[in-house]
Length: 225
Image 1: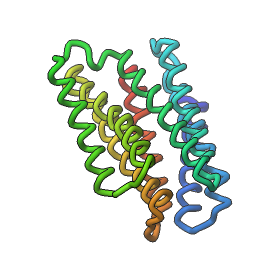
Image 2 (image 1 turned 120 degrees about the horizontal axis):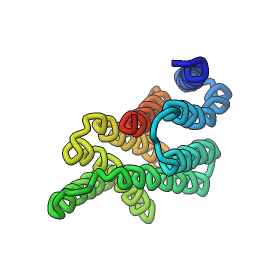
Image 3 (image 1 turned 60 degrees about the vertical axis):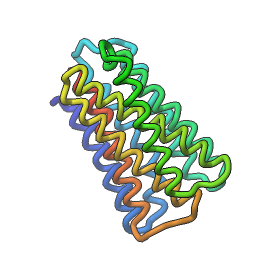
Image 4 (image 1 turned 90 degrees about the horizontal axis):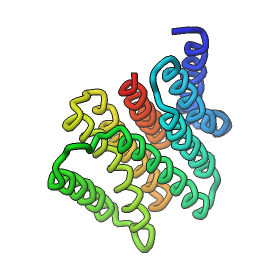
């Protein structure tokens, strides 16, 4: 690993540690300063890891769009108010679309039976619907949460198909990352939309969020390498 890669990795580690400390210790300034740095540093590490590989240009472009939209979502979710929450949710949704497009272009679904594809999508939709009903979201919010959760879980479906259909174990990181991401985002919705909280909730949200993004991006990079 060269100096550029070590520097990028250390910068990301510092941003993540200080963000988690800010959440754990209840220091909003530390949290707000470091949060917008997280996804750009994840992207920087990913692009440096792809250097010297046969990665196509579309891969770097789609990954850049995905993480830029997630960075925008991070910033919008720091601003109080329901409109900013919706805008942040939309940015994350678009970012997941770019993630899915990467896996589709990688061919994770090629050669699979139509029945298996239909069953996996149906199972993902049923799981998200069960969570939405269990948490008792009301009004239009429940539809927004259902659509977002379904799309996020479809990222996990892509990972599962990469393992079972393409026989590439690295895609387990995608599958697990999507599930961890789903848990993190439902905690956000539980707090922001339903007003529930518990000690250390912010720390838990950020720990799972950072872990999920790292797992998904790592699976994309390692599958290419």
